[in-house]
Image (spheres, rainbow, N blue to C red):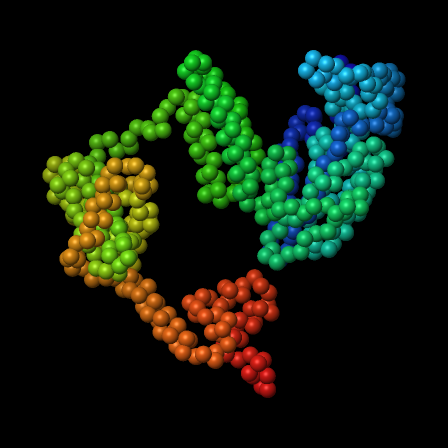
Length: 524
C-alpha cells in the first residue's frame, strides 16, 4: 500500500527522470537499446561517430545512503507520515551468514536498502535519480536501476572526449556525495565508428584510465564497435545451447512430460532469449542470423519428439543425382539414376575445364537421359551439390554457353513434364550423392574425352599462369633489380602487400614497381 502511494505521487508529478526505466510501468530496457541503436545507425566513415561509457556501480543496493533518501524526499515536498515510515523502514536490520550448519555472529546493517523488499527498488530509483541531473544536454543517458550509460554523437573524436570527460567528472562527483562508487575495472568505453584508421579515446575515471573495448554488453545485448552484432549472435547461441540441454533432460520419456509443457518451456527458456533484442540484431547480415536457426529447430524437435528428417518434398518424383569432379587437370561429370543404375551416365571432359562446367555437364547428361523416360514418368527431380551451377541456371545467365545448351534441352520436353532442380549439401551421407561422386571420379581415369571444346573462359587461368611464368622468368633474369630483392615472387600484389601500412610504405612499393626511386633518380 505504501509503495503504491509512493509510485502514484512520483509518476503523477513526473518526479523521476524520463530516462530511468527500472521498475516503472510502460518502460523497459528496449527503450534504451533502441535509442542507442538509432543514434549509432547514423555512423559513416567520414562523419558521425559515437562514444559510449557503460558504468558499473559497486554494491549499489548495499551502499545506498539512507539519510540521502530522506533528504531527496524532503526536497520533493514529501511531508507527513510517509517520510517517517520510510525512515523507520530500514532501521534495526541484522543479518547472519550460514555456512553448512553453522551461523556467524549477528551484524547490524547500517547502510543500504533491504534486498527483496517491494519498497526498496523505488527508494533506490529515487536516490540514484539525481545522477541524470549531472549529465549535460549534449550527452545522452540511459538508466535502468543501477545500470547507467552515457553516450554522445559527433564528427570529431577530440570534441567527444572533452564532452564525455566533463560528464564523467560531474557524475563521479555527484555519486561520491551520495555514497555510490563506480568500479573502474568493470566500467568500459566503446567507440562506435566506421573508420578504417582511427585513434582510441583516452578517458579517465577516478584518476584511472577507462578500458576501451571493441564490444560491451548493454542490457543483455552485446554491442560491437561496428554494430554488425556478430558477437551478440555468438553469445546468444552459446547461451541457448546450454538451455537446450535442460530441455533434453526434461523431454526424456522417463519423465513423462507432455508436449504442451515442453513447448511452454521452450517458449519461456529459449524463444524468449531469441526474441529479446531481435528488433536490434535483426539488422545483421543474413549469414550471421542463420546461425540461430539450428537453435530454433532443435528446440522444436525436442519438444515435439520429432526426427531430424521430415517428410519428402518430392515423394513421387523420379530422382536423378548429378556431380562434377576434378583431379589436377582431369575433369569428369556424371548423372546417377538410383531407380535404374544402368541408365547412369559419366563422361570425361577435356583437360583444363572448370568444375563449374563439369557440374553443368552432369546436369546436361541427366536431362538427355530423362528425355528418354518421359514416356513412362511425368515428374522428375535433379539433385546437385553445386549451388553456383543452380544459381546460374535460375538466373538464366545466357552468357555461359552451357546454360544456353541446358535451356535448349529443357524446351524440347513436353509441357506436362515437371523437373525441379534441388540443391543438396555434399558429403553428408546422402547415398545418391555419394554414388554419383564415385561415378564421376571413376570417369577421370577414362582414356577418351568428350568431343566438346573447352570454353574460352576456362582458358583464362592457363593464359594467366603462362603470362605469370614469363613475367617471373624475366624478373629473375634482372639480378640488379631492387624490386626483386623486396618482392621475389612477382605474382604477389604489390599494393596489397603495402595496404594498411600507411601512405609512406605504399608510395615506396609503387616506386619500386615503376623502377624509379630516390636511390637512382634523385637528380630529376
